[in-house]
Image 1 (cartoon, rainbow over the protein chains, first blue to last red):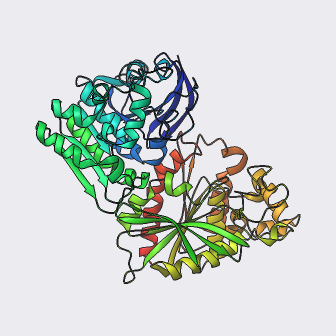
Image 2 (image 1 turned 135 degrees about the vertical axis):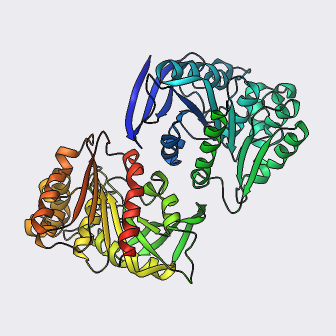
Image 3 (image 1 turned 60 degrees about the horizontal axis):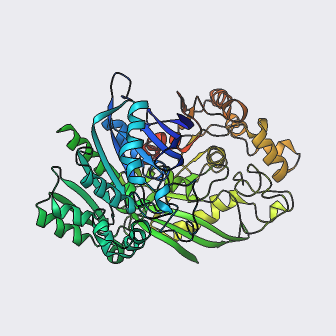
Length: 281
Length: 281
């Protein structure tokens, strides 16, 4: 059961916001789908999943990135979701902006109480995917995934852990080595506990080092990003990809910061990358 | 004295947010300027002033419309401001979303207490214009003005009242006959009092009927706009332009509503319209 929150025409297609009762997240969850003008029951289109960063929601990318123009032209759907469950509440879940509400890190928590509803990996890769593919004219054989910051972490990790699901992946200013940086360490300790082996299963650098994926990974990071040195450390990903033989195009963008002014500048190139990689499949 | 709130690289140019002490508005006001990559002390660029609608701020168009991409390509600056003064407070100024805070209607109030600081016409056409032309590499001989909803009203009225200042004007879902519709009547009664002759000096239909301007006016309105029949009534403007011999290109956009999904879809065409009209001067 999907309830429609709003649907708006945008670049000839339809930008919709929806809510449904999620089993993975133990309560209602919101998501958004952009359908390009050429999508119809007779013409299913590939979807690009966009995962947002800390404090964001299903609306952030949709309203701030200007991506529908390009998706309309390329015939791509865009699927976005919230950054954490919101309905079950736990002590401390709003004490900080980098843990709990708005900071689900796209993993299934194993520690109580978080493991009751903080199951964003299962949500994105299974529940939401099956839901949108059943209710919207989306292909179920070709998908891309991308994200920003914490969502860049999510995109890289989910693509590396679910190789059959996503044929193209990219990230804007991603957290690539969460086990090694403060944001990731705080989240992993809270959601997964102290077992560092479990952390590495959700760490893009550790995952890619074990085995490369077939498609080229596209990453952009701004040189004026205030989180660059402390949280992002893209050189770790360059190094891990190199050692694994992973094809990677990582560009440092001169003077750009962490904001959606950076995201809106480079979102088009990422969508074109996905269209091109999906077309080759 | 301009204080920098933030500056971010965007599409090769610079998106800045600023604050200054405004004489017209009797207190601090925020505004934003996007400079395209080709703007420099040696190469001044024309500015497009964008006026936002009810409840919006200087940030709304800047973060939601994806306009910097086009402005970057066309070599246009974008200047935005807040939709009302915010620092002087008056009883009832936040009682409703269509009067007072966030609803300045781009006029100089003549009724107390509003006339102390609600002087948005003077602010936009004189104070802000002189400020940004003195501090940024903006041409002082060519300007365009556009807006959305209440800001569409503002753009049309300011272009019609200050014919020497703006060489190109356009509007998205504008209020064109404020004297005849509830939003405008409430605002005009509050800011200007009961004298309907004074209202007509801020009514685009009444102004254009008196005398056409030289440039073609571009207007887009969505057919699914929920304010269409009650507040917008674009047919009044078609009629007024026709009777005055005013060149007008007004298009009803099938299925589009009043939101920024509509604005982001058609902002590009408006910027291209302004670039083309300004280039012809």
